[in-house]
Length: 411
Image (cartoon, rainbow, N blue to C red):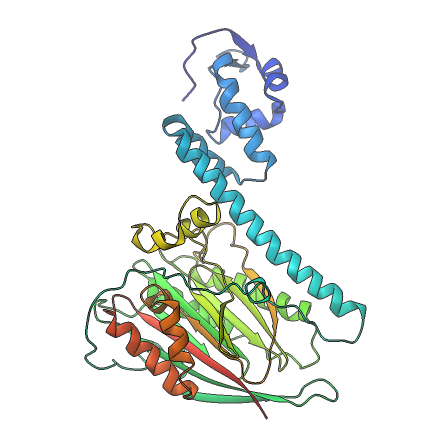
């Protein structure tokens, strides 16, 4: 609807100059409902704007200048009309996401430059690890409960899960021994949910977990993991960029596989192993962790509203678990018009490394220290994965759980 007229009127040309928006942009924002003119001449079709609309127009211009998508611009503008402080928080949250994603791409670009400069292998490490920052936050509310036994390890309908352990050998670089990736996967419905909407895969070269949501959440998670299973095993000499490109393409394919499932979608965290490196792709709030020499490091960042508020300094991490919107996703595979850009990374592997991929049925209820202790208990991947499911159940088992444990051991 046109904005109410309460002052002098400006032609579209005058309004464009005053707002620093082009006439073409103004016409587009009118079509999208972001900035309709105050009046449209019924005979000529000329657009006229009220002076009072300049404030909204300049806000739109600034938001577009920082790269905010039009859908987010509309939400911020609507929020600004009734809650300016809330709009400011939304902008800070958006910018925190931009900085986080830019930092991840910068680190990847630096590692690729190192790779191309010479024959040495990539040596990039995750920021959390190099700075010594450990993941000690609890992102879910702990609840009291007792385990009544772990439910079916491969829950009904979860045909993509690989129960038990699997191993895959890979040849290393010249003069470097090969490694074996020994893996195990567990799925559990939990103590509250009526259905299983998580999916997982643990193979010689591919690790993946997905957490479906909505009425077709199970199908969404299965479809996403199934699309990732089509990624061919990379050669040990494969370039990191090529592996990441293949992984990103697979994530886009997974998003397409979810298309058509009404009001449903899924998270996806997946890793491809080449024998010396682990290429990681991540969308949503499932997680990947690394246990190395006793240090426990989170390799992914949650794509949630709460995490964005924490990044923006608007929320203390200790308060995140009590937020009712802590599971509200900013990114997910939902088959929308624009596939989400996955968070990508490459990590050097070492003998003795233990990786964990899990859905928030574990990470949202179990403190990071408890997960670390369970992983570091000195048992194999099978026993560790089962112990993690038991841990989630002991804390109330409020959600489905999917976890994959993978050890890097000498061949």
